[in-house]
Image (cartoon, rainbow, N blue to C red; front, side, top):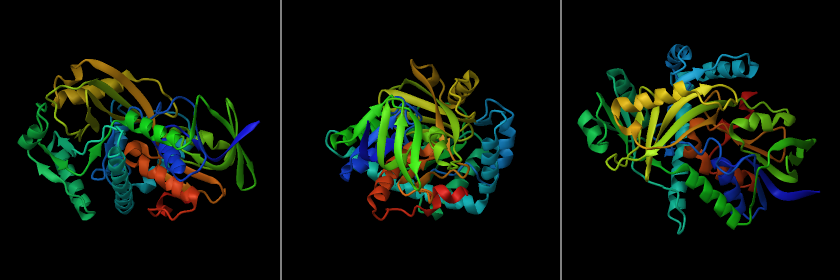
Amino acid sequence: MSERFDAIVIGGGVVGAASAHHLAERGASVVLLERGEICSGASYGNAGWIFPSHGTPLPAPGVIGQALRWLFDPESPFYVKPRLDLELVRWLAGFLRAATATRARETLRLNRELSLANLALCAELASRPGVEIGFARRGLIVLCESEAGLAAAHHEDGVLRELGGDGRALSPADVRELAPRVAGAITGGVLFPVDAHVQPARLVAELARLAVARGARIRTGHEVLAIARDGRRITHVRTTRGDFEAGEVVIAGGAWSPQISRDLGLRLPVQGAKGYSITVRCPSDFGETPIMLSESKVFVTPMGEVLRFGGTLELAGLDLSVNLRRVRAVERAVARVLPGVETEPHVETWRGLRPLTPDDRPILGRTRKFDNLVIATGHGMSGISQGVISGRLVAEIVAGERTGLDLAPFSPDRFG
């Protein structure tokens, strides 16, 4: 016996929960299938930023040379674990093709549009009575330790201004006024005042709760084993705990999306980009504005009683082991400019796999191969910054509505 729903959403992170929420709001019968628990993957340990003003894509001019130097340093911000993997080789080739000035600028514009729409949705969500997602609009500080880092931050600010951004240059004294715990040698920074942040686990939990309130079913501990098809239609999704008959299917499985879709003959060039975060008790004098340490690519976010700092990007397949060298590298980067913060009482060390595409754009939309399938994955390190709007776009597609944003640049078929 199988259960039938108008929509089956696969994945319980921010994109899956937002999809279930927006589908249920439109009156669809929805079931969300999650292999673990809600928000047990990449969304959980996220820095929580919604950053329309800081979204320079990974593949960009000048990044290749820097990345090649980093590849040989297992403590660097960007590390590829050596292994024989044809999909990784294809992914890296796509990354090289995307690293042009024209494509990087277009990706920055597109990701900024997604994040601006996401910011508006999160602000609206936070304004609802009884909804608590830790939403705070305090901006974002890009903090620089070197003259080269400061020049790069000012360049990015200039590009963003052409797209409607409004960064403000900061002297070292300005930085310390906004972030009193900064004590190391710095050259300055840039403040992006429009940006906001949330507490990721709260956001995903609230989206799931709102979906259930509208009648959605959430089935945790349901790992997808196979997806059955009949011609251009998906008919069933088989899980470790039973089968589900499909009206529409949404694959929002993050880094596991290629594995989930293997029965469908789709090519989803998504690599698991392992990142780490460390959560400690937040010092009372830390300040309220998140900080990005420009040179080390480490992100520091106050979240109420706790402070989260994290970063690094490690392409290691679906390997979830903890590399303590990379954890220590994050801690040392924080200690250089925020001494003492890393020694606050420890709450949690986390790692997770962010789903990263070679062009650093999410995959959103239908594929031409199937009539009742929507793909929503590949958000990289921008899952929280783009996840809620992605869920609404999924619901608009399923409902046959005109989507609020042009999805052609995010098409699942753009990779061939």
